[in-house]
Length: 324
Image (cartoon, rainbow, N blue to C red; front, side):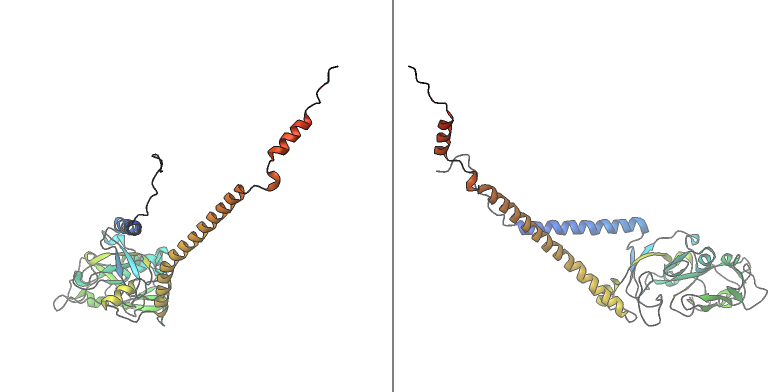
Protein backbone atom coordinates (compact mmCIF):
# COMPACT_ATOMS: atom_id res chain seq x y z
CA UNK A 1 0.00 0.00 0.00
CA UNK A 2 1.39 3.37 -1.00
CA UNK A 3 1.59 5.89 1.85
CA UNK A 4 -0.51 8.99 1.41
CA UNK A 5 2.46 11.32 1.78
CA UNK A 6 4.58 9.47 -0.78
CA UNK A 7 5.41 11.54 -3.85
CA UNK A 8 4.76 10.14 -7.26
CA UNK A 9 7.81 9.60 -9.45
CA UNK A 10 8.16 12.49 -11.86
CA UNK A 11 7.77 11.61 -15.49
CA UNK A 12 10.26 12.91 -18.04
CA UNK A 13 8.98 15.98 -19.83
CA UNK A 14 8.03 15.27 -23.40
CA UNK A 15 8.98 18.73 -24.66
CA UNK A 16 12.21 19.21 -22.73
CA UNK A 17 14.41 19.09 -25.85
CA UNK A 18 12.24 21.59 -27.68
CA UNK A 19 12.34 23.93 -24.69
CA UNK A 20 16.13 23.70 -24.44
CA UNK A 21 16.52 24.43 -28.15
CA UNK A 22 14.15 27.40 -27.94
CA UNK A 23 16.01 28.74 -24.93
CA UNK A 24 19.42 28.45 -26.61
CA UNK A 25 18.08 30.06 -29.80
CA UNK A 26 16.62 32.94 -27.80
CA UNK A 27 19.93 33.50 -26.01
CA UNK A 28 21.83 33.47 -29.32
CA UNK A 29 19.37 35.91 -30.94
CA UNK A 30 19.59 38.20 -27.92
CA UNK A 31 23.38 38.27 -28.15
CA UNK A 32 23.27 39.02 -31.89
CA UNK A 33 20.67 41.75 -31.37
CA UNK A 34 22.76 43.31 -28.61
CA UNK A 35 25.83 43.35 -30.87
CA UNK A 36 23.88 44.97 -33.73
CA UNK A 37 22.36 47.58 -31.42
CA UNK A 38 25.84 48.35 -30.08
CA UNK A 39 27.18 48.74 -33.61
CA UNK A 40 24.34 51.07 -34.53
CA UNK A 41 24.88 53.14 -31.40
CA UNK A 42 28.57 53.52 -32.27
CA UNK A 43 28.29 54.14 -36.02
CA UNK A 44 25.00 56.05 -36.21
CA UNK A 45 24.24 54.17 -39.44
CA UNK A 46 22.05 51.27 -40.49
CA UNK A 47 23.25 48.87 -41.68
CA UNK A 48 26.51 49.50 -39.80
CA UNK A 49 28.56 47.15 -42.02
CA UNK A 50 29.49 47.07 -45.69
CA UNK A 51 30.98 44.22 -47.73
CA UNK A 52 34.07 44.86 -49.85
CA UNK A 53 33.38 43.53 -53.35
CA UNK A 54 36.69 44.16 -55.14
CA UNK A 55 40.45 44.18 -54.59
CA UNK A 56 40.91 47.97 -54.93
CA UNK A 57 42.10 48.35 -51.32
CA UNK A 58 44.37 45.30 -51.08
CA UNK A 59 48.07 45.61 -50.19
CA UNK A 60 49.51 42.81 -52.32
CA UNK A 61 50.27 42.04 -55.93
CA UNK A 62 49.61 38.29 -55.63
CA UNK A 63 46.03 38.47 -54.24
CA UNK A 64 46.96 37.62 -50.66
CA UNK A 65 44.81 39.06 -47.89
CA UNK A 66 46.04 40.43 -44.56
CA UNK A 67 44.24 41.13 -41.29
CA UNK A 68 44.29 44.88 -40.67
CA UNK A 69 44.04 45.71 -44.38
CA UNK A 70 40.80 45.97 -46.37
CA UNK A 71 40.63 42.96 -48.71
CA UNK A 72 38.02 41.41 -50.98
CA UNK A 73 35.29 39.80 -48.88
CA UNK A 74 35.94 41.73 -45.68
CA UNK A 75 33.12 43.24 -43.62
CA UNK A 76 33.88 46.85 -42.64
CA UNK A 77 32.22 48.89 -39.90
CA UNK A 78 31.18 52.36 -41.12
CA UNK A 79 31.00 55.36 -38.77
CA UNK A 80 28.85 58.32 -39.74
CA UNK A 81 30.54 61.70 -40.33
CA UNK A 82 28.97 65.13 -39.98
CA UNK A 83 31.50 67.42 -41.69
CA UNK A 84 34.66 67.34 -43.78
CA UNK A 85 36.84 67.92 -40.72
CA UNK A 86 35.70 64.55 -39.31
CA UNK A 87 37.91 62.90 -41.95
CA UNK A 88 41.71 62.84 -41.81
CA UNK A 89 43.17 62.57 -45.31
CA UNK A 90 46.37 60.85 -46.37
CA UNK A 91 48.22 64.16 -46.28
CA UNK A 92 46.78 65.00 -42.84
CA UNK A 93 47.91 61.60 -41.61
CA UNK A 94 51.35 62.03 -43.17
CA UNK A 95 51.82 65.24 -41.20
CA UNK A 96 50.59 63.80 -37.88
CA UNK A 97 51.51 60.11 -38.18
CA UNK A 98 47.85 59.05 -38.10
CA UNK A 99 47.20 55.73 -39.89
CA UNK A 100 44.33 53.33 -40.60
CA UNK A 101 44.37 50.05 -42.51
CA UNK A 102 48.10 50.13 -43.13
CA UNK A 103 48.52 53.67 -44.46
CA UNK A 104 48.07 57.35 -43.62
CA UNK A 105 44.62 58.88 -43.24
CA UNK A 106 41.04 57.62 -43.17
CA UNK A 107 39.28 55.26 -45.56
CA UNK A 108 35.87 56.61 -46.54
CA UNK A 109 32.73 55.11 -48.06
CA UNK A 110 30.96 57.35 -50.54
CA UNK A 111 28.19 57.20 -53.12
CA UNK A 112 29.27 58.19 -56.61
CA UNK A 113 27.54 61.44 -57.61
CA UNK A 114 25.63 61.12 -54.34
CA UNK A 115 23.39 58.47 -55.90
CA UNK A 116 22.06 55.80 -53.55
CA UNK A 117 21.25 53.55 -56.52
CA UNK A 118 24.91 52.76 -57.20
CA UNK A 119 27.18 50.56 -55.11
CA UNK A 120 29.13 52.71 -52.61
CA UNK A 121 32.90 52.98 -53.11
CA UNK A 122 35.37 52.38 -50.28
CA UNK A 123 38.68 54.20 -50.91
CA UNK A 124 41.24 56.22 -48.98
CA UNK A 125 40.79 60.00 -48.75
CA UNK A 126 44.03 61.37 -50.19
CA UNK A 127 43.55 65.13 -49.84
CA UNK A 128 40.82 67.72 -49.37
CA UNK A 129 40.75 70.51 -51.97
CA UNK A 130 39.07 73.82 -51.23
CA UNK A 131 37.92 75.83 -54.23
CA UNK A 132 39.27 79.38 -54.06
CA UNK A 133 36.80 82.27 -54.49
CA UNK A 134 38.16 83.01 -57.97
CA UNK A 135 36.99 79.58 -59.18
CA UNK A 136 40.29 79.22 -61.05
CA UNK A 137 42.44 77.56 -58.39
CA UNK A 138 42.42 75.33 -55.33
CA UNK A 139 43.83 75.46 -51.83
CA UNK A 140 45.05 72.37 -49.97
CA UNK A 141 45.56 73.35 -46.30
CA UNK A 142 47.05 69.92 -45.49
CA UNK A 143 50.07 70.83 -47.63
CA UNK A 144 50.92 74.02 -45.74
CA UNK A 145 53.42 72.42 -43.38
CA UNK A 146 54.57 69.59 -45.66
CA UNK A 147 57.71 70.31 -47.68
CA UNK A 148 57.60 69.97 -51.45
CA UNK A 149 59.70 66.84 -51.24
CA UNK A 150 56.43 65.02 -50.57
CA UNK A 151 54.41 66.90 -53.21
CA UNK A 152 55.11 68.86 -56.36
CA UNK A 153 53.14 70.81 -58.99
CA UNK A 154 53.72 71.24 -62.70
CA UNK A 155 53.78 75.03 -62.32
CA UNK A 156 56.61 76.21 -60.07
CA UNK A 157 54.66 79.26 -58.90
CA UNK A 158 51.88 77.11 -57.46
CA UNK A 159 51.67 77.00 -53.66
CA UNK A 160 49.52 75.13 -51.18
CA UNK A 161 46.91 77.92 -51.27
CA UNK A 162 46.96 78.45 -55.04
CA UNK A 163 47.14 75.28 -57.14
CA UNK A 164 46.32 75.45 -60.83
CA UNK A 165 48.33 72.59 -62.35
CA UNK A 166 48.79 68.86 -61.78
CA UNK A 167 49.51 68.12 -58.12
CA UNK A 168 51.60 64.99 -57.58
CA UNK A 169 51.90 63.25 -54.19
CA UNK A 170 55.24 61.42 -53.93
CA UNK A 171 55.82 57.90 -52.59
CA UNK A 172 52.29 56.79 -51.77
CA UNK A 173 51.19 53.47 -50.35
CA UNK A 174 52.79 50.07 -49.93
CA UNK A 175 54.34 50.38 -53.40
CA UNK A 176 55.64 53.92 -52.89
CA UNK A 177 54.19 55.22 -56.18
CA UNK A 178 53.75 58.84 -57.28
CA UNK A 179 50.08 59.81 -57.55
CA UNK A 180 49.13 62.69 -59.92
CA UNK A 181 45.97 64.77 -59.46
CA UNK A 182 45.03 66.74 -62.58
CA UNK A 183 43.75 70.01 -61.14
CA UNK A 184 43.03 71.48 -64.57
CA UNK A 185 40.29 68.89 -65.08
CA UNK A 186 38.64 70.01 -61.86
CA UNK A 187 38.54 73.73 -62.69
CA UNK A 188 36.24 73.29 -65.73
CA UNK A 189 35.72 76.88 -66.78
CA UNK A 190 36.05 78.75 -63.51
CA UNK A 191 33.51 76.68 -61.55
CA UNK A 192 35.79 74.76 -59.18
CA UNK A 193 34.06 72.86 -56.36
CA UNK A 194 35.48 71.69 -53.04
CA UNK A 195 35.78 68.05 -52.05
CA UNK A 196 37.93 64.98 -51.41
CA UNK A 197 40.30 63.27 -53.82
CA UNK A 198 40.23 59.52 -53.13
CA UNK A 199 42.17 56.46 -54.29
CA UNK A 200 42.07 52.72 -53.74
CA UNK A 201 45.29 51.52 -52.05
CA UNK A 202 45.71 48.91 -54.79
CA UNK A 203 44.98 51.34 -57.64
CA UNK A 204 47.54 53.40 -59.56
CA UNK A 205 45.38 56.49 -60.08
CA UNK A 206 42.95 58.60 -58.07
CA UNK A 207 39.20 58.33 -58.58
CA UNK A 208 37.84 60.44 -61.44
CA UNK A 209 34.31 61.70 -60.94
CA UNK A 210 32.81 63.00 -64.19
CA UNK A 211 29.49 64.73 -63.80
CA UNK A 212 28.76 64.83 -67.52
CA UNK A 213 28.86 67.54 -70.21
CA UNK A 214 28.58 71.02 -68.76
CA UNK A 215 29.50 69.74 -65.29
CA UNK A 216 32.95 68.26 -65.90
CA UNK A 217 35.13 66.64 -63.29
CA UNK A 218 34.88 67.40 -59.61
CA UNK A 219 36.14 66.07 -56.24
CA UNK A 220 34.00 63.93 -53.93
CA UNK A 221 31.51 66.22 -52.19
CA UNK A 222 31.27 65.74 -48.42
CA UNK A 223 27.51 65.18 -48.76
CA UNK A 224 28.24 62.04 -50.80
CA UNK A 225 30.25 60.48 -47.98
CA UNK A 226 28.33 57.78 -46.11
CA UNK A 227 30.97 57.46 -43.41
CA UNK A 228 34.51 56.41 -42.59
CA UNK A 229 35.76 52.86 -42.09
CA UNK A 230 36.31 51.67 -38.53
CA UNK A 231 37.41 48.09 -37.92
CA UNK A 232 36.84 44.95 -39.98
CA UNK A 233 35.57 41.40 -39.79
CA UNK A 234 37.81 39.55 -42.25
CA UNK A 235 36.60 36.95 -44.77
CA UNK A 236 32.94 36.61 -43.73
CA UNK A 237 31.64 38.98 -46.40
CA UNK A 238 32.52 36.32 -48.97
CA UNK A 239 29.43 34.39 -47.91
CA UNK A 240 27.20 37.26 -49.05
CA UNK A 241 29.18 37.90 -52.24
CA UNK A 242 28.95 34.23 -53.26
CA UNK A 243 25.24 34.03 -52.50
CA UNK A 244 24.39 37.25 -54.39
CA UNK A 245 26.88 36.86 -57.24
CA UNK A 246 28.41 40.29 -56.55
CA UNK A 247 32.05 39.25 -56.19
CA UNK A 248 33.90 41.65 -58.52
CA UNK A 249 37.38 40.14 -58.23
CA UNK A 250 38.93 36.78 -57.41
CA UNK A 251 38.63 35.95 -53.73
CA UNK A 252 42.05 35.58 -52.07
CA UNK A 253 42.81 31.89 -51.54
CA UNK A 254 43.96 32.44 -47.97
CA UNK A 255 40.72 34.35 -47.20
CA UNK A 256 38.64 31.40 -48.43
CA UNK A 257 40.75 28.95 -46.44
CA UNK A 258 40.62 31.06 -43.27
CA UNK A 259 36.85 31.49 -43.65
CA UNK A 260 36.17 27.73 -43.73
CA UNK A 261 38.59 27.05 -40.88
CA UNK A 262 36.89 29.71 -38.75
CA UNK A 263 33.41 28.37 -39.53
CA UNK A 264 34.56 24.84 -38.66
CA UNK A 265 35.93 26.07 -35.33
CA UNK A 266 32.70 27.94 -34.57
CA UNK A 267 30.64 24.82 -35.30
CA UNK A 268 32.91 22.20 -33.73
CA UNK A 269 34.08 24.12 -30.63
CA UNK A 270 30.68 24.06 -28.84
CA UNK A 271 30.35 20.32 -29.57
CA UNK A 272 33.80 19.65 -28.11
CA UNK A 273 33.00 21.78 -25.06
CA UNK A 274 29.69 19.95 -24.57
CA UNK A 275 31.32 16.52 -24.85
CA UNK A 276 34.11 17.55 -22.45
CA UNK A 277 31.64 18.87 -19.89
CA UNK A 278 29.57 15.66 -20.16
CA UNK A 279 32.68 13.51 -19.59
CA UNK A 280 33.69 15.60 -16.57
CA UNK A 281 30.17 15.29 -15.14
CA UNK A 282 30.19 11.51 -15.63
CA UNK A 283 33.54 11.21 -13.83
CA UNK A 284 32.22 13.27 -10.92
CA UNK A 285 29.11 11.12 -10.62
CA UNK A 286 31.17 7.92 -10.76
CA UNK A 287 33.49 9.17 -8.00
CA UNK A 288 30.51 10.18 -5.87
CA UNK A 289 28.92 6.74 -6.34
CA UNK A 290 32.16 4.95 -5.49
CA UNK A 291 32.54 7.04 -2.34
CA UNK A 292 28.93 6.33 -1.31
CA UNK A 293 29.33 2.58 -1.91
CA UNK A 294 32.55 2.56 0.11
CA UNK A 295 30.86 4.22 3.06
CA UNK A 296 28.10 1.58 3.02
CA UNK A 297 30.55 -1.30 3.17
CA UNK A 298 32.10 -1.33 6.66
CA UNK A 299 35.19 -3.53 7.20
CA UNK A 300 34.61 -6.76 9.23
CA UNK A 301 37.13 -5.64 11.84
CA UNK A 302 34.94 -2.66 12.62
CA UNK A 303 31.77 -4.75 13.24
CA UNK A 304 30.69 -5.36 16.88
CA UNK A 305 29.61 -8.82 18.27
CA UNK A 306 26.91 -8.38 20.93
CA UNK A 307 27.78 -11.72 22.67
CA UNK A 308 31.44 -10.86 22.83
CA UNK A 309 30.57 -7.45 24.24
CA UNK A 310 28.45 -9.05 27.04
CA UNK A 311 31.20 -11.52 27.92
CA UNK A 312 33.73 -8.74 28.08
CA UNK A 313 31.55 -6.66 30.36
CA UNK A 314 30.98 -9.64 32.69
CA UNK A 315 34.71 -10.31 32.89
CA UNK A 316 35.29 -6.75 33.87
CA UNK A 317 32.87 -6.95 36.81
CA UNK A 318 34.53 -7.59 40.24
CA UNK A 319 33.82 -11.00 41.85
CA UNK A 320 31.04 -11.15 44.37
CA UNK A 321 32.22 -11.03 47.97
CA UNK A 322 31.17 -14.11 49.97
CA UNK A 323 29.84 -13.39 53.45
CA UNK A 324 30.79 -15.75 56.05
